[in-house]
Amino acid sequence: MVEGRARGTTPELASRLKSLRLLVFDVDGTLTDGGIVLDGGDGEWKRFDVRDGAGIKLAQAAGLEVAFLSGRSAPATARRARELGVARVAQGACQKGEAFAALLAGAGVAAEEAAYMGDDLLDLPALRRAGAAACPADAHPAVRAEVDYVCTDPGGRGAAREWIDLVLTAQGKMDGLLRAYP
Ligand SMILES: [Mg+2]
Image (cartoon, rainbow, N blue to C red; front, side, top):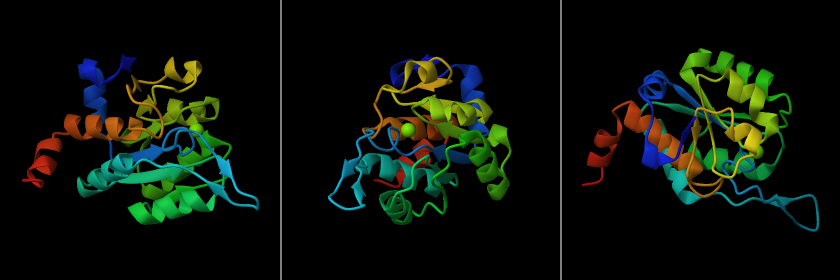
C-alpha cells in the first residue's frame, strides 16, 4: 500500500498505472464527501468537487475513459455524469464486483487496464478485481488495508483528482496537459 502523494508510487504500482485505459469511480464517499441531503420529497442533494471534475476532464483529454459505479440511484449522479461527459454510469449496483466486470466488458477493457476507486466495504469486490485500486483518505479501514494507493485527500475533496494526477503522471501525460495552460 502507498499512502499519499508525498510518497509517490512504487515502481511496481507505477508500471501498472501505465496500463490503465479506464478509471472507474464509486460516487458517494468517493466523488462526494458521503453526505446525502434529503429534501422534503423524493429528491436528494450531493456535493461534488469542481477540481475532481476538472481532473476527470483532464483524464478524458489524455485519452482515458472514466465511468461511475454507484450502489445508490440518484438523478444528481446522472446529472454530474452528463456534465462531465461520462457515458458509462452504473447506478443501483449493489453487487459491485459483477457491475465492475460488466462495465469492463461494455468498454472492451481488461481488468488489468481498469482502475477502481471506492471508500467502503461494498466496493471491495470491485477493488479486488481492478488492475489498480485506490481509496480516499477517509475510506473504511478495511478498504484502506486492501488498496494499492490511499490518497492524502478525502472523498469529495480532492481524492479523485489526486488519483487521476497520479495516473496521468505515471503515464507521462501530465507535462503535455500542463503545456495546454501556458
Ligand atoms: Mg461509497
